[in-house]
Amino acid sequence: MSTSEHIQDHPSRENQFSAKDVLAILRERGWLSGDPSPEQSAFCLRAADLLGPHAADARGLAELLELIFHYDAAQVLQTVEAHAVLARYGARDVVRQLALFLLDPAPFDSDRFKEVVTLLKEKLELRGRDLFHPLRLSLAGRAGEGELDRVILLLDEAAALPLTGSVKSTRARIVEFCAALD
Image (cartoon, rainbow, N blue to C red; front, side, top):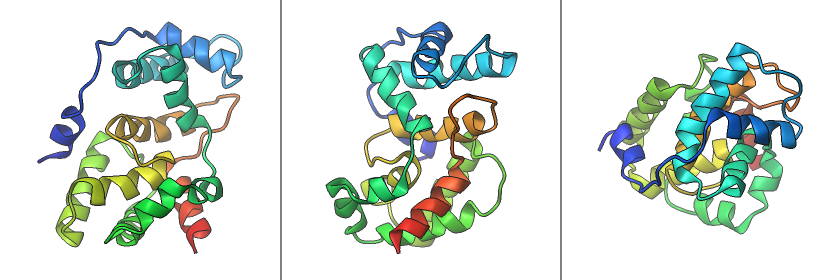
C-alpha cells in the first residue's frame, strides 16, 4: 500500500473548516498576531484542508494545530504511549533511519514523506503500526492515526513562516527526539 493510500484509508469527516477558522485559532493561541502575510494565509488554507476533515469541532482542530506549535521530546518520551510504541519490534530502528533521512535539510513535504515511508518499508521490512507509530511519535509527538501524517506535512512549512509561536521543523524534532531518547 502506498503512503497516499495509507493516508486516505482513515475515515474523515466533511471539512467544515476554512482558512479563517485556522487563522482565528492561531490568533487566539497567540501563534500569530497582526494581519497575515500571503504565505501565512496560504498556510492557514493548507492547514484547514489537511486537518479540517479530521476534526469534529473547533476544539479538535485546535488540538491538531497544537501539535504543530508545541513539541517537547522529553515530555513525549515520559508518556506511557511512548514507552509502548518504542517497546515494539523495530521501533528504534524506524527512529534511527528516519533521523538519518532527515539529516538532509530539504523540506519534508508529501513527496519526501512517501520517499521515507518507502525507504523504511524496504530497509526495515516493517508495515502499518510498527512503521507509522514510531514515525508519528517522533515527529508529531503522538502515535495516533493518519491525521498525524497531515500534521507532519505542515511542520516544515510552518517552521519557515514568521509566526509569533515558533515551530520546530521535522529535522529539529528528530534531533531533539533522538537526544532525549538516549
